[in-house]
Length: 187
Picture 1 (cartoon, rainbow, N blue to C red):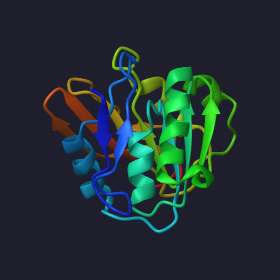
Picture 2 (tube, rainbow, N blue to C red; picture 1 turned 60 degrees about the horizontal axis):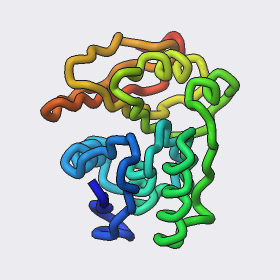
Picture 3 (cartoon, rainbow, N blue to C red; picture 1 turned 180 degrees about the vertical axis):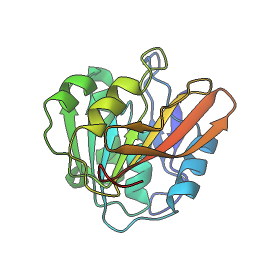
């Protein structure tokens, strides 16, 4: 796969570069469109965290739809350079921040994560559970939404700390589970 296109918003139809041979799996257009249909088509300045960012397809899609700022967490050097290049190409270098780190290490060091929306797309062999546990303890704001992409056969627990499962969808071999940060005593 050499390119991924932005589906909607300000940069609709623009293509993101995906370097050949990079061991990532960008979210397919159909799955990305479905996720944003569930979240609501457009945003109003939200802060977004894109974990295991790859080339940043989810974060850039959110920016195109009106998110204010995206922080990408990615450890792969080629992917980081690609995120930087895509941000320059789209004119959004001032709207992104890149954290060149391992996601689990980054989350373990975070006391508070001040984001309204978090995308989580780990390698399928790793699965989302370690990051969900860390996010559930990380002091997310009330109502923050976490979207976890995973193998279709993986089944999420009802909760991970303050994260409560809200929805689950299946798209062929891909599963997507939505969580919301809630108070400890909220149902």
